[in-house]
Image (cartoon, rainbow, N blue to C red):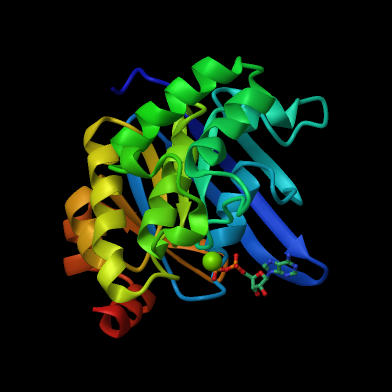
Length: 246
Ligand code: ADP
Ligand code: MG
């Protein structure tokens, strides 16, 4: 493991929105197979950091490497980089007029120019993985929020990404639907996928994360194994935050 190169490397990342400095020097390496959970209060810059990783936001300064490719370099083909990263958002944004299968098969067909039959075969495989093969021909509106989010995960997996990024994937769900999504994510973690997960689900962090990162005010305040950060936080800001969410 130690000789491996990071899949994602963030070096001194700064991000401003106008005068608002949102990220203030983030350094972070994500290793192959690593599961990293990011915690932090609202507005601390978690989403902005994730969005910088797949260039949905442009870094103001610093560098981000995905598979050794500097995505902050103007000469980089960002669409190529995005193929290596699956992203799952709080809102799943499935195409309402496409079936579940078509939603999952769409990116491989458009981006990798895979033919329809192989894209759909792959999509069905991914739907099996999230336990929704039987919904392949259904439309998103007929699915529960939890099922829709599982489809969104299958969609992210369909490109066979090197890493999956999750931004509060269960925050928009009714409480009774959270478990099925976390279960799919836990299975994915067990399969060896590299994962970066922004979530307030402390139990998920405790059970799945190799590393927990606490962010506040645009910096990484504290990080370490889940036991250390969640049970024995060193920093006052981490303690205060955990008291509120636990
Ligand atoms: P978190 O995900 O930790 O809640 P965000 O990364 O969403 O935090 O936001 C951090 C800060 O950046 C907030 O002050 C927010 O208002 C600001 N921000 C986020 N996105 C934008 C944007 N597109 N334009 C302007 N400000 C933004
Ligand atoms: Mg956010």
